[in-house]
Length: 237
Ligand code: 13P
Image (tube, rainbow, N blue to C red; front, side):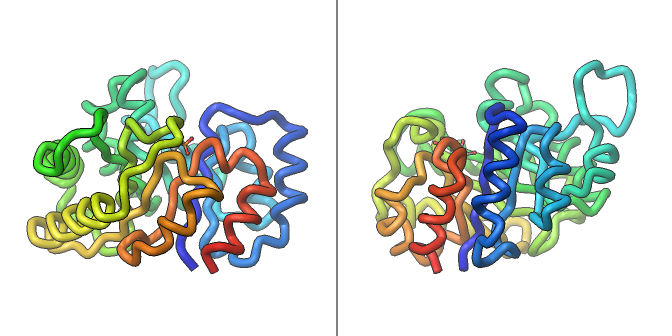
């Protein structure tokens, strides 16, 4: 079964979380489901046997950085994964400049990385590839010796697709995912998994499932309802 990653972003409250856990308790394949809640609720999922991740980490282990959370603190909460470089963090928090440090901290602390990359507007393939190549190089250069086959996963999330209901057509998506895999393999000698993220929902999942190159999904708003995730799981078995 493909990897299903639920990025709740800054949503849901305690009652919602308790209900969520009740509903997905019997999710068929907990080994391939990763929940990225807001920090206050990481523990709730962890205690109920789910694999959890953080939506971000600080660029430092400790220090006078008000409002940030250290990888070491998140590790104590039991995270296995962290998302790094989500487009919303790049947009609101200038994360472009911290990608290298954050990947370094996560991998040095044995926390797996889901690195988000993606073009902001729909454009031709060559322009898209140039943007993706730059985002990959920013992340991989200086961390090349830390990145192994399974400790970093790329999530291809075209920014124009996030929250818009629009997704790339299958040919385009297949070509882009192949580009990412080939570029990383040829340049950095690492075989990576690539997730797709952006408006994944029950009405487009069957079509996305036709693309063998997709290793899983990073899902935002559709993942906020646990029934949706159960429904989706029956389509990706
Ligand atoms: P949506 O699924 O809401 O489009 O969000 C995708 C996303 O940003 C996941 O990280």
